[in-house]
Amino acid sequence: MREPKIIDYVLLTTLALIWASAFFNIKIATYSYGPVTIAFLRILFGAIPVIGLCLYKKIKIEAFSQDWYWFALIGMVNLVIPFFLIAYGVQKVQSNLAAILMASTPLSATVLAHFFTSNEKINFTKTLGVMIGFSGIVFLFSDNILVNENNFLSALIIFFASTFYVIGGLLTLKISNKKNENVTASILIWGVIFLIPITALTEKPWSLNPSIDSTISVIYLGIFATGFAWLLRFRILINNGLVFQAQVAYLIPIFGIILGYIFLKELITPKILVAVAAVIIGIYFVKKSNIKKITSV
Image (cartoon, rainbow, N blue to C red; front, top):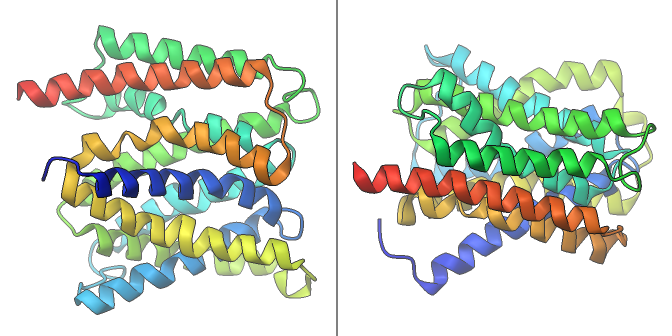
């Protein structure tokens, strides 16, 4: 690992922009596609650059090796379920709300890691961060302009989706000895396998007459927000390490709000600003605790 340079900060900002842009593109995609089809196409198009890189670098893809069940399970938990839940929920809520809710993933990860790992126990600093961050989420749900009786369940579903990302991350520890490109390609392949029959039976996408905007958005979600973003994440991890890469969590909700306003003219209420500030502060305390731990090792 190296000391971050200007190019590293540019790449980190680019990654945050790409991941944040996923939310308003999901919203546009829902205008023409159902949530299962969006999840399927996103995974399908996302697999293209990752598998291409594996072939180029001659990295063996182990989707059907003796560890196939781990790849299949992670593909379902870390891709299929959250991609579907987010697309389902975004149909009825603003994309900026989804960006903030999904940005709470590091907070959920802190809680679950305490129970399911041996070296990520909660301490006072982490507890403070989790309490501040989740209080911002609770406060956000009190915003009647954004969350009401018609979309409360949709907002809750998006928040629930973030938990599956965390569980998927914990499951990935079981195969942490394998190359990231191989793991990503393998779980994407299994995601496609799972969703082919489900998509065909439930939404029959071949009968759709989608708009150009929705089609562009769903292709973008796959190739850039899924495939290219994962590859960019790998590069940042290799060059600068996990602590530096984790700072992307601070930027995603901010960019999500800005992009939602620019492209969809979404409302930015005072409670949104307070909630995102609380989430960012909460993440800061959680990350600060992790940095202290890494430094002391």
